[in-house]
Length: 405
Image (cartoon, rainbow, N blue to C red; front, side, top):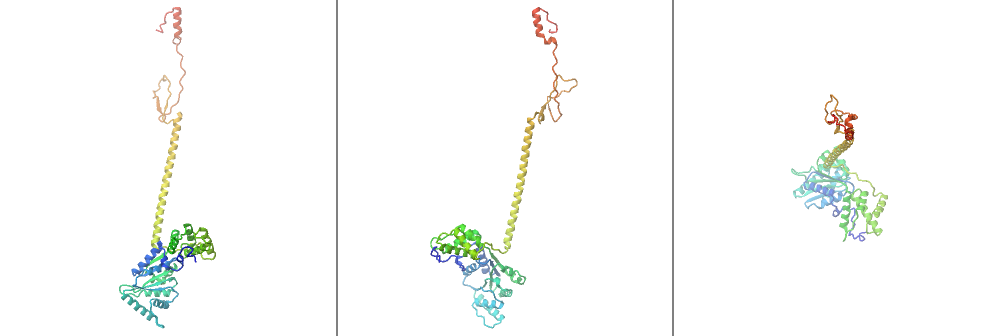
């Protein structure tokens, strides 16, 4: 409908699991690597889980497309089966025709012969069970029994279980301990983050474009991520509705206002909500990485605390040193409280029996008392009036006294 308006050769956000539109995000690349390794290494059970609409089926289609012609694949998408129906479904998907009325042992014998013939021809038999969380306990136990079909050196059939997160809860039940021990490859698909959501949307737009591709701005993709919680199927629903509303309102550039209008319409119909997706418990490697990260954070916090304590101590020492210098300046400016030397006043001539004292003594050695100097004693009369005596002798011709001699 809107393809020609936006120069697209097809709808970029169709809900069909098209491997051509698989965006190689970090989690999808890791999941694809795990799945390919499990198939090529002929490992035990392969378990891939993810939220509804997280791209499990698209991932599986991509992995199956990459298989060579030497692999026979049986894929079950309807899993509401009991044990016998499961065996018949596997045989039908491998191209066998189970005879009506045959008992279960005869069905297992025919299936085993087919698998042996495949191995003799150098072919690998792969059984993929989608939506495996819907299998009953008896059906899962039958799947485990199928894995017992083997030669002396290898398994005759490789089994991959694809399902929602509650598949892990089912496999953790005590009744399935033997099956759980045979799981050698396990991975959980996480939702996309905001940056991956932006790259996912524009990747699909580029792939479907004819000529210059349409591009959603980061503000628009962040808004879509908020309401989709990073789940690819919800991203497709919102993005497809945005293009449809843009076509209806003749807007070739997707704006935040248009996206808000679309989200209000979708939320009113209950298609989308602002609710984050709950993720499954992290793997052992992720838990170890989280523990190491927390330990590093604690070490950094401890170093920061010690550095702050050292800075506080240095600040206190600097403050005490400044106060001491201020006190010393005040003491030096006060002559009565000086910390250096204080002069000692001494009368002259010294009194009888007094000990000579150094003109400068330390206050710390012995306290000193300031003694006022006595008033000067009057000089003898002749000595005081010698000038007048000379004048009298000069005027009256008097002889010089013996004292002045």
